[in-house]
Length: 246
Image (cartoon, rainbow, N blue to C red):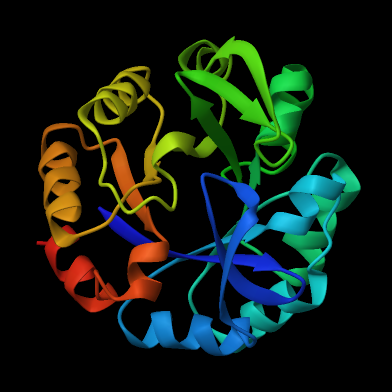
């Protein structure tokens, strides 16, 4: 199982939000590229980037910061936030050199478009499933739909989806651990044949141990994103990588 340190970008800085709330922001660094180099040096093999301003604006905003991160490190990056048309995808995938684009809002609103993009960019499109009480939230988590996360994912079975990134918003940034309900949702998604990355709530190495144990039973659980915990020091990236790759 791969450990993906998260770098959330807002106003060109590395921040974390609580439950996706833009009013509950903590700034961790003014130099996202330096932060990226740090996580790479501690053993990360991939980074998870989020353009928080982009998620709100519906288009990439923190382009300079993203470009600086990609240039600063040798490991691949995935990026979500505001990627809602093919021009945006070409910008981040072809011009900037991001390895994977994460699509959330547009996959819900235009599932056929997302299916087309998986054909146009095979193996480079990830589905961002952000759920509140099992229902998909979009537009930087500002809107909650009436579509269940599992139901949305079903529409993309059989397509070349690089990963489904499943976030339980209630857990995100709250430092409360990964709950069993979220784990069961991820196992259900993996059971559809989709590769799954866990996101939200990873707080201590016990969470990494639990997810690693699940991944041994369900090999389609391919990764875990770690955010606030690595910035607040409750998890060291090197320790998480060691456990997850054991």
